[in-house]
Amino acid sequence: MAREGVLIHAPYERMTEEQVEQIHHASMQILSDPGMISFNSEAAEIFHASGADVTSITSADNPCWSIRIPEKLALYAIDSAPKVVKLGARNKDNSLILNGEEPRVFFVSGSEANIWLDIDFQSYIKKSNHNVEIQVPEFHPRRGTVLDLCQAAHLCEHLESLDALIRPVNIQDKDVTEDNKDVNKFFASLNNTTKHVMIGLTNLEQLDNVVNMARLIVGGEEELKENPIISFITCLVKSPLQFVDDTTQALIEISRRGLPVAIAISPQGGTTAPIKEDGIVTQLNAEVLAGITLSQLVNKGTPVLYGSVPVRVRLDDLGDSYGAPESSQYNVDCVQMARFYKLPCYSTAGVCDAKIPGIQSSIERLFSDIVVTLSGPQYLHCAYGLLGGNATFCPLQAVLDDVHFQMIKFFLAPPQINQSEIDVSLKQLEEVMRTPQKLYIRYIRRMLRNGQLSLPYPFEAGGETDNVLALAYERMNEFISQPVEHIDSATTSKIFQEIPGILPRLNVYEEGREQ
Image 1: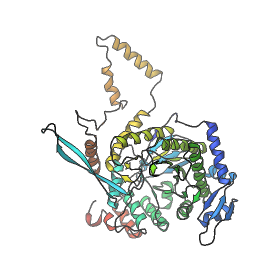
Image 2: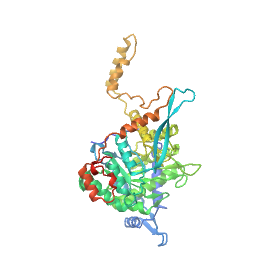
Image 3: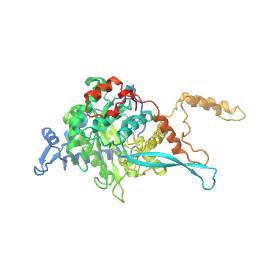
Image 4: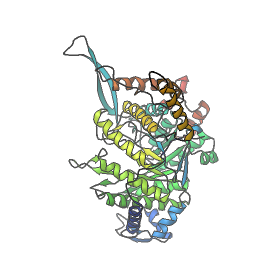
């Protein structure tokens, strides 16, 4: 079994077929001329051995290469990349099947925010009526920790609409170093959720330790191939058109191991890419295809996701503006391009420019959540709890997002319209017209029992008081108080024995202690 996701029966598309073809041909032109600049020597060697035109363009002190990728090489890679990618999970019922030809959407968290936003409530007396007490939320930003990541993973386990975990918070404890960061962020995530875990590597030297950890959890190398409970994100391209040395090397090594990987490309329209829709989409498409081509040249059949994380520049401070409508336009177009190549798409929605939960965050998030979901990406990430343009993760916001996605999923359910259903409705009409009240109330309960009616908004305000945040806070604490389905003690013991660098405080079985 696998998670169901949401099947979009008529995906929203901005571009015509002709426009998609135009973007494709323009991207192929970019790959062949001017091509890519690579700061990674092995990537240059791989492309050269495969027939690309590779030339050195700098001195030995700062070596880089020009790589002109012929169209036939890019088309070979597109044909070689799997059109269906499986993302496994500790609980196999939480596995995801991403089919590039089927617009079935899965909702995923994201994406390594540095700031964790706590919330509590203070009581104040209403000035106009001293008998009324008002609960006012107060927000407290701080640096994220490894135990925060544990809590975030545990919370995500209980969010009904969330299908997989991308770690939403960066771990910045004093004893977390570049050498032990990867094993701790993977273990903290895997040990606190049974859903799929996707993370980017900090230190390539830790790749084998992370992979070995996953093998220990699932039972071996073949079991991991069958049930890949982890996958990776590689931001190997610095826009415009530059292969970064370390992240490109990460893609090469991950591809050699045959594990799923998202080729995540994040140009900023107006600075590192054209702000015009056609320009940024063409450049992003070329950059994604360059990464996919490299992955297939390293290991034909590497499961890759076409990753689009485009954003428009803010016009006041040149920062990212995820809340701008253009950012959603870019993403919808990229989903179309991925579908053109029949590749599973890793897309972006639900990020906002607001710093705290509230009206602005809800408007910006829901706008992109709805329109990008309607376009039909298979893997929609960043959608839970992120604020301030990906800088902040708020668990309370994640709970709000979960409810909103449940509403979106209900809205997108296919209509149950057929002749049999119409006959039932006609019969109801006849029965109602024979009654003096002429009301259909008696038929509501049956639909409610069958799950055909949506429930009221769970954080609905009472009277004149807006209690949304307070009620969401109660639900958040209910989720966090639920028991955690940790990795079993025997496997945990093996992990701590065989994988160096995991912080002792993450061993929930140490001295019989639970987190």
